[in-house]
View 1: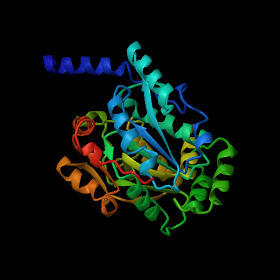
View 2 (view 1 turned 90 degrees about the vertical axis):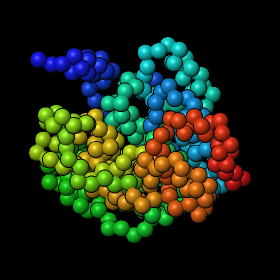
View 3 (view 1 turned 90 degrees about the horizontal axis):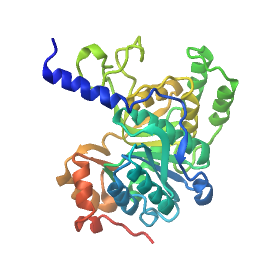
View 4 (view 1 turned 180 degrees about the vertical axis):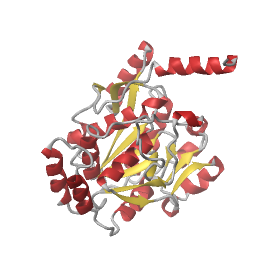
Length: 344
């Protein structure tokens, strides 16, 4: 017989599951500026995965990270905030006003819920691949990340343009094996066209830079551990492929286009970082390990030294241990002004 505590947990989970939907390869748009990339012609698309109700964080990110004055003058950047739906009419009206003012909200028809992060990722990648494909680089960040824009992009460009083994031939070999049914010849034609893309000053083709996590056990429902996935997910595997910690991922645009095509043939599951790792393995991306420069769950007492060092900063980006509290502090305290950089 289950205890009262166990029954309460099951009730909470059942309520939460009402907001979790089965995953799709595409989601309808509710709010989106489809012509923004066409107008701004960005080199870099900064895509932020955060919570719909956290307007304060979006305000800080616009001022610190998305502020075009903080980026080098010869690099154009555009920012989007990917969010889901909420049943609150007040929240929807507020978000609609925010969209009208900033034109940087990307909202699709999935519910805001922790277990819908994969839906959020699929929606953002699909939008960028469809409407910003002329850009060179996409950078995904969580909304509890900080970096110095000019220093970050210089380090990312340096690491992503170093000579690496070209894996396009391996990717073509993989698809020729037909281990996965790619039903349309359109995908193979797409890969051949992308294989001829040259390197650019931002990144080599087929490249992802991130904090790489390796040898992570696939948690099943009977293990009584956090983050379980169904037995049908990677049914014959016990270890996930190497995958990126999602707080900061830099992705060459050709990879974004490939990922967009694979959503229709590789069934999604709810852990977005691990699902992206599965897709990376399928297309054999060149994964640049930036673990040394991407500080995960960094204590905030190291934040001032890391960020204020400016061009001498060792870290590319910092994921905050207490993100919500610190972002609230940034919005009020003097350190907020100290972190602003003006390159005009």
